[in-house]
Image (cartoon, rainbow, N blue to C red; front, side, top):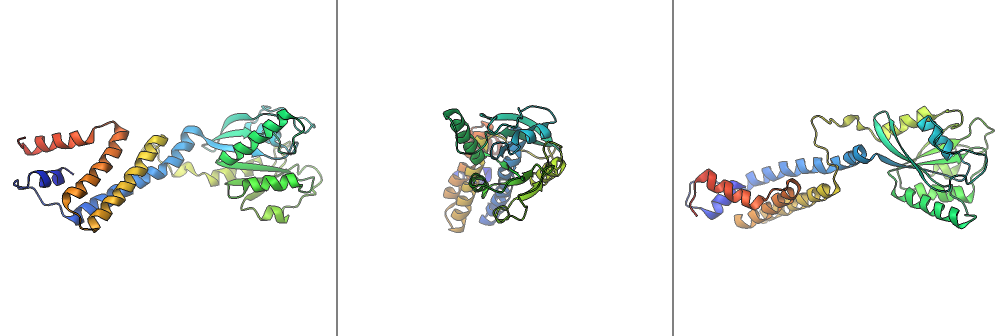
Length: 288
């Protein structure tokens, strides 16, 4: 960038010519690095906030029992009465190095009172916003219309289907056409007896493999503002490359490159334009 600025403002000085090919090579490297940073945001969000994991299902399907089994403690109240959970319960847990923000939601059904109605509406909203949905179904019953609505909630979402209560008589079959339509891993469990919990944890580990992240050597983006600025910088890199391919003059190209630097300067807090000018004068001893 310094060489471009000097070539524009001080053509009488013997500055090495910056060719379009060289600029494109530089921009390609910058774009590659920025794209790597942009992609790191998803992992950074996981590291910072945990994977937002919604446990959804009908009342008495075993959501609270599942939460307790994963946490290995009696965090949620479990009774034989449907609709015990009226509000969300949130807990953090680490599964094989993967941080999860587990959210036990109110059972989804036709609400019987106003309080339950609010809880169910909240459950649906949490499911929409979740990074992962664990949908749990009672294996001792055939799917109902309420279950079908739950399956609709997980459509196009990263999800795992659990068929709970394998310690009791099985009615719902894994090959049920409504279950098979979903692009989700199906696991049979008994939350009460802790059966299938390890398999569930292994599936989550496969879905969110953080072992590829080297925290010592890689920069991980965790701030959404920084991520948006990097995305904007990538867009400006593409615009600059288009300008070069259109054979625009060097001073026009320089304007677009300044835009890239300003995007990055908004992350670091540096005033890029002034820095460039100061470096020109310091490096080439040019008079104003």
